[in-house]
Image 1 (tube, rainbow, N blue to C red):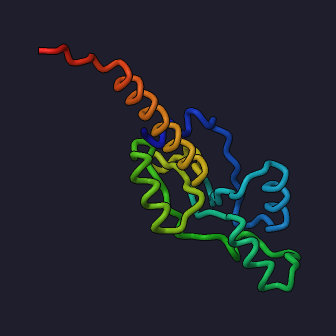
Image 2 (cartoon, rainbow, N blue to C red):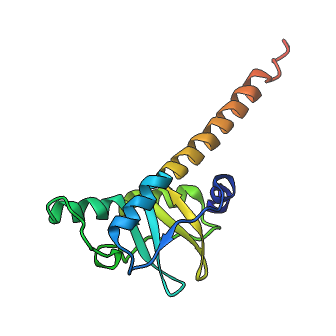
Image 3 (tube, rainbow, N blue to C red):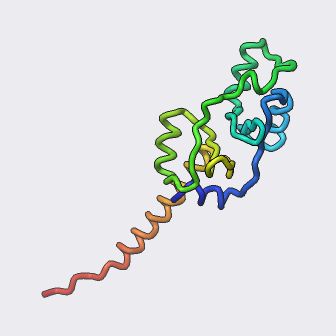
Length: 148
């Protein structure tokens, strides 16, 4: 299965923000839309990711308040990205190595979507369940040996 297939199933809704926006506004968007990340775009180009990890770290460092803190002060600039043609198993391995929960999918410089570790786990589970059902069906219909 390819990353593009996850995006096709998941849909193409994207949530982005700019480095100039406040973290407080980002938290509102994330909470309202039940999402764990925002893609940070700067002048139409991918700049990084803001996830609940950076928000929680900012809250811990600032005594539980965000005030006028901007996204540009805390977002992750070295975001792992994936191409639409990447195999999901390869993406899963890389996400585990990098401890990445959210990965922007880029085709060249164009943002195609974001896949989460949950999306990847679900896709792998469904693919393996399908293969398991097919194997069980094949074994069940296996022709019996005729006596010699």
